[in-house]
Length: 224
Image 1 (cartoon, rainbow, N blue to C red):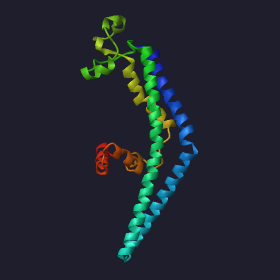
Image 2: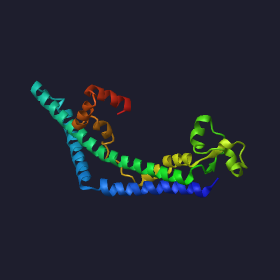
Image 3: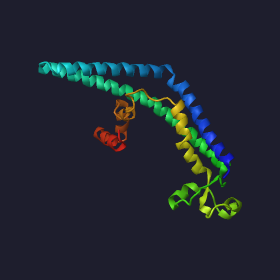
Image 4: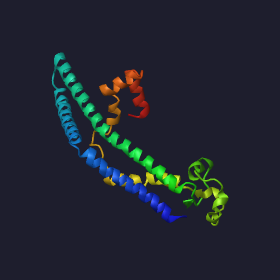
């Protein structure tokens, strides 16, 4: 096992994620437009909570049909405003995630050029066939790496950088993001689903032949 290689890959993933988190915070999440959108979302959420509490009190009182329709319209209007603002907040976080994905794709290419065809680690077990597609990716003839297999029973236990890279993205990258990443404000977590219901999104989907009722089916399939 080449410890220095594994350390280098882990440090590259961690440093890249840290840099991206700091850049996203500076240029996206600390921008005036984002803070203004978050403030508008918080105000809309407060107004909606007050309206819900007010309507709960009114339910115990007799109301006319006109009053009920007025309350329903008010509630629908505030719900629509809240969904729209949540979608806008989610759009900024989605933009940050997109840039991060592109950066890690570049990092993968750089590491692939550096560690291509090289045994980075030796697994303490013999992986099953499907797993070998990741662990043995990029290696050709095991005989080229005979010295590396002195302490293992099977050449398939060799592990390339691709598998280590995947493990790092699920561990190092996640921990760095938890420590330095910017999370959406509470209540805006379902904003990604709401993005599909904005007028702009619906119009774009209609240009591709997607009907409004099909949008709901897409949301259900995606779990939003």
